[in-house]
Length: 125
Image (cartoon, rainbow, N blue to C red; front, side, top):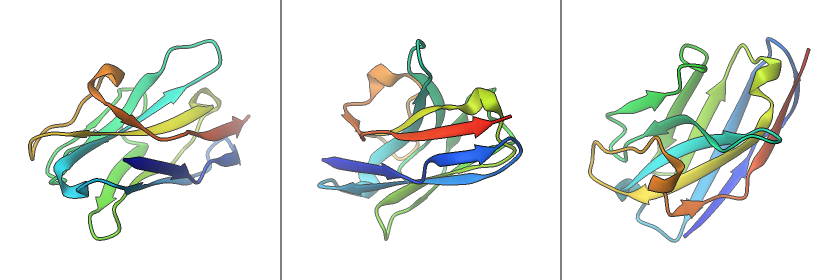
């Protein structure tokens, strides 16, 4: 299983970015997918997740209403649309994958076996 995250960069507060995570080596429509982030000196934290069916989504309270997770099963890709970005969103963002039921997604890092390499998001004030 390989997960390739991309789309990070430098953006001003209030701006937007879209992260992508391209998956290979797995049956994509059998895996719940998650996004986590890790700021310097902090633990990896849950951001958003989606079930493989796309029927269920979950978000951290800190990003609700600003971030949207989606997936394209035909492209084996999961996206994280990030709007109204804040300096506190600055972190390395990781995508993760784990096989599960059609309505499953995980909100804890320990629930995922497969991880991408991370993409850095920097939000300037």
